[in-house]
Image 1 (cartoon, rainbow, N blue to C red):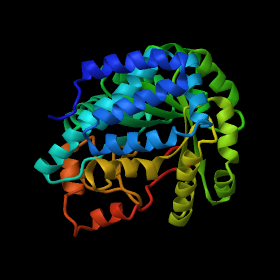
Image 2: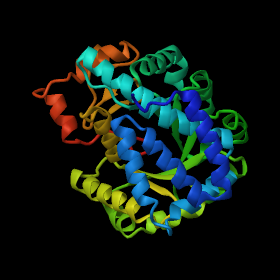
Image 3: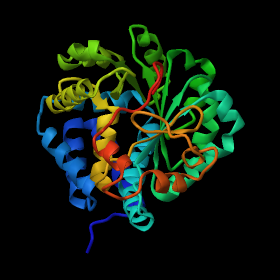
Image 4: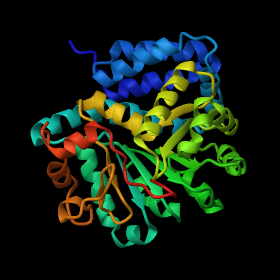
Length: 359
């Protein structure tokens, strides 16, 4: 008999655990992880919860303080809904659906898709973005990363329409207006990710005051390797109380620097010295995808709706979300064959096209 639990039972356990964790974070978190590991039947869940179980044996872990702070200052429904959408919908049910669809379609399917959104393009092609999320969920994709250049609240109607998905929205400090705060507080499946710099404290304080789930992101280059490796970056970002400190390489960042930074990120998580979780967007997203379905498949659509790989954009109609269905794009671009050039590119983690202000 499989240990798989239906969602309603998982919801009951998680809600009960959240209450107990507020009273005793250390014991409550460990009990929840132990139970989750016992009932895990997927490769990703087993790997994740086994690592978490080992890490939390450290009684001095800063993550206990992070959890206590999150439960105190983040809207419980926001924390619960986003967590369930990622942990259950995306990495449990969605992961199984991805593997089934990969077998049926003979192509790689990512566990998450990132989309760079330009307001004008979004308004002119809103139905295409709607179609993307709808089709993505049918394939098993329930985690989405939006990189929004301005007027972030324009995307909120789309986020609200898909309550089963989790949306990580990367934005600039200028996007955090009073209207933004009011509308964002209504979305329980949203995590806001603000660009980190020396002026971010006031904005994060506003997000915290509104009990919103938020993180920070930092774009690094070769000149930033020292502050990442020695921990100064995370020592500073933790003062703003973000759940994650997300790292993205800049356009000129070499493969060697990215690998060095990813090694530092993984070591930082193991050390558990900071009350924020270090996350390398490219490295960790690829790692999750590899655990779910063996082959790392990274999908990013630029502001024109054109699919980008790590180095360039593809130029024909099969690679644009404004002209093609997501399934057709994936079947044309990421076939499950070992001898294709595209497969080689992604297996070797070649750098994604980015601009200097977002991805």
